[in-house]
Image (cartoon, rainbow, N blue to C red; front, side, top):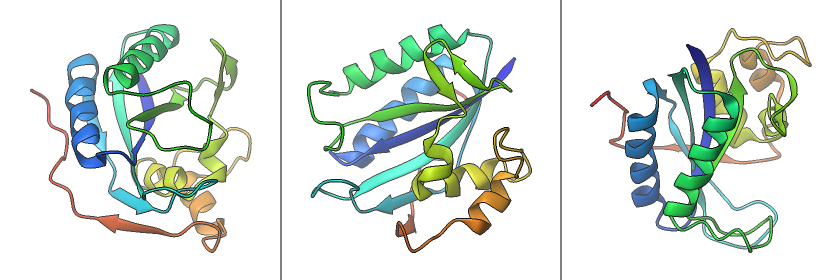
Length: 167
């Protein structure tokens, strides 16, 4: 089994779309664990606030199959791929980590660059994998979060009732 880390975000009917995504992911992958859910302002455009979280899951599926599943799920949840890069999203699911893979794999850069760039990815990832080491920096995700310039992006934890459990 390979451990998979996914970033999940939405700012359009966010609670409903995240709940639907988590339900669908629970059917595709095993042993799903989720971080705290964070709310943050939209970055790069004026829009509604985003809800974001990170999940860990175990899978025996290849990276290309995982990517196809996630793209299909985003589409099912109304993702409009014709929109500008910085725009509202019904669903955005990004592969952050796939086991210990590093570099370009199946057209995906791993670990995903957003891990060290965005608070809404790094903080929840550091909750789930505090002692894991980012291969490019050599620092743990906990240390990366401790060193992150938190004035760049404001996040606040929100209460949710969606801890993921196996069916």
